[in-house]
Amino acid sequence: MPAMDNAAVIRVAGLGKSYETAAGLFPALKGVDLEVRPGEFIAIMGPSGSGKSTFMNLLGCLDTPTVGDYFLAGKNVAQMDRDALALLRNRTLGFVFQGFNLLPRMSLQDNVALPLVYAGVDRETRRERARALLAKVGLGQYAESLPNRISGGQQQRVAIARALVNRPRLILADEPTGNLDSHTSEEIMRLFEALNDEGITIVLVTHEPDIAAHCKRQVRFLDGQIVSDRLTGEGGA
Image 1 (cartoon, one colour):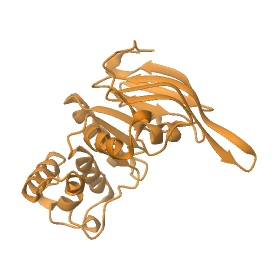
Image 2 (cartoon, helix red, strand yellow):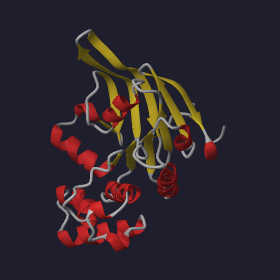
Image 3 (tube, one colour):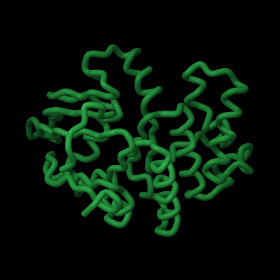
């Protein structure tokens, strides 16, 4: 397992999450310890029910842990009020989901710019930044188009541009190739690799080994715990 680093973008210690079920309390996550350092490209892997999705929801501050500590960009998430947490998420995290989550009646440019609206950025700056990012992901010519006029792979590129618009330190991607064919999946992963080469930290959930092979580190979950954590590819064997 890679050595720890005090400058971690993410640090979790003893992180656990339990849910009430008809059969009683179910521990979906059990005492997880993990650090993610700046510039890493990590695959979170494991079968259905292993805890990987629960873990990503906690990292994205979409859910709260039952026990343990979570430090995001050096700040203890548990000690932050709702407004402070929303601001930290908006400035630190970019999200990419399996389902793209584009608003169908908004242009691609406006979809990409949407996080900037919540951040209070002026309209002209929003337009300029959105157009620049659409160009970055190879879709500059479609800025005024609606999502239904482009392919699924192109829609995921738009979603990645949207995740980048607030210039986050970290991208969380939950099964980002799950709705795409194998060729398009490879294109999306090459885009993630290029972004990582620019220094963006990426944590990606996948159950597909060929997708995980693009990442530099693989963390495998089973029964709510980390069972392996190893460097791959450029990082080593």
